[in-house]
Length: 69
Image (tube, rainbow, N blue to C red; front, side, top):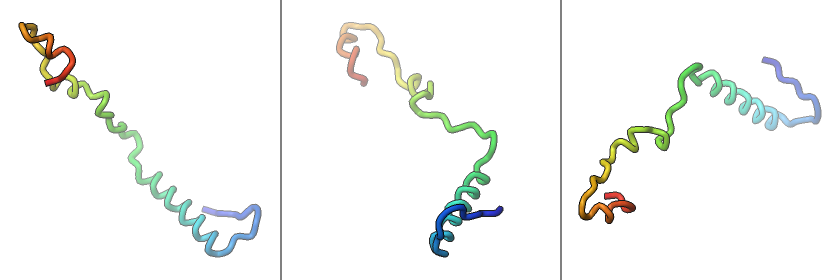
């Protein structure tokens, strides 16, 4: 890997900081498994909806139409 400063005159500290960021990004990119599926969002998980029972019709079913039990 070759890094070339095109403009400006960075100090050794600035150059070291920039190099640290580039190396950290490269290490993070190579650490990610390729082809692995992304984790599913809990909002779209069908078991979240199926876990609750559906209210049955009855004499007090009107009171359960909005508020979950």
